[in-house]
Image 1 (cartoon, rainbow, N blue to C red):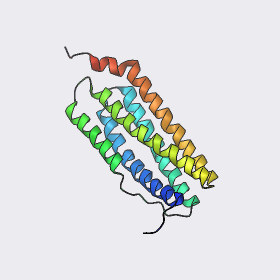
Image 2 (cartoon, helix red, strand yellow):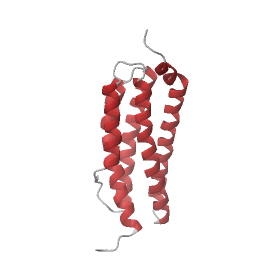
Image 3 (spheres, rainbow, N blue to C red):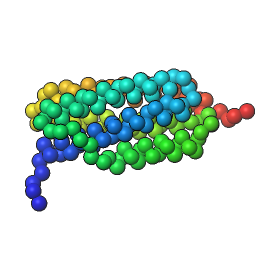
Image 4 (tube, rainbow, N blue to C red):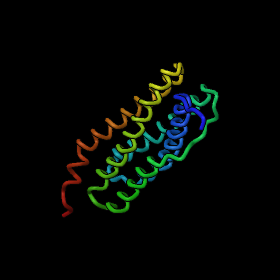
Length: 166
């Protein structure tokens, strides 16, 4: 067995988040269509555009470290997205659907925040200053999306989900 280094782990984790982002960008339009709240639809559409930019930044990071941009199957994101699909199926047409969609989206955001925070720290440790800046930009964007989703949930969506249909 060959010795693995932080550099190997950094590259492996980059491939993981690259795969994850490409899955998320495919899931967001479906989530936007399922959302009942116009504000939630807009939030998902906005984040889809942001995610496309995040994929481009990841491609830049791969380039900066001299590696080909490629994904590696991310079981975690597949599981989180599968749970989101279940919520869309089980709560379709109910007042609780949007709250469930936000919950699913925030699970994605929290996963991404964890990954980007780690990758940024590793990039800094490995002397990849430009890569660290790109990763930090995405980290801030993901945290902003999480905050926006929390505001939507706390603003009206959770209260609407609590009410029973007449």
